[in-house]
Amino acid sequence: MTDIKRILFFLLGVSILYKMTRGMSDKLSITNALSNLVKKFEGLRLKAYLDAANIWTIGYGLTRYPNGQKVKEGDTISQEQAETFFNQTLQKFGQEVEDSLKAKVNNNQFAALVSFAYNTGITNFRKSTLLKLVNQNPNNPLIRNEFNKWIYSKGKVLNGLVKRREMESNLYFS
Image (tube, rainbow, N blue to C red; front, side, top):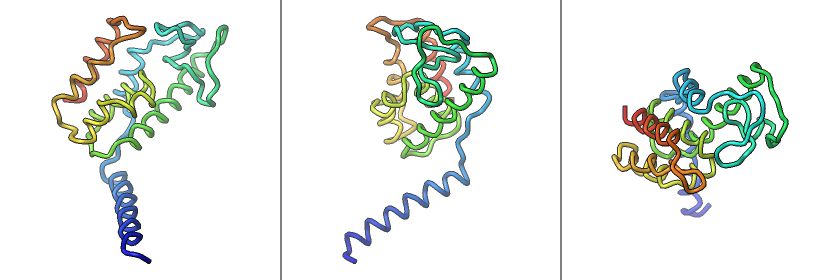
């Protein structure tokens, strides 16, 4: 085995070990506070509606069901289904946010990032300068500015997004 291969295997092992030990000692979790924050801003609708971006949405802000199917006009769900779908989706976003993190964050920072990703989408989160700054230095004060850039829908400032980003950034830095 060449030295380069040994180094790569070593780095891969260190990366896996880091993820495993981080998961055991500093487990990031979906808390009731996080669930309540997301529910507060998303609201609950049991009948599909067009959101501010003109996308069919249902439950607590879902545009897709946990099985990947898109929400469509005329869809309805029960309160129980809304709770189940929300919990499954929030867990999925939590895992995807955690997988995107290279830097160690605390639970408040994690909660703020999951709320952000739930609202903007995981692809937007992964491509964001917000995530880049968090991964460089999770205590960088410029991170607050990055939250505050995500307040637009179709080019217009939405007051609900302004409030949500303020709440998320305050939670992140608390």
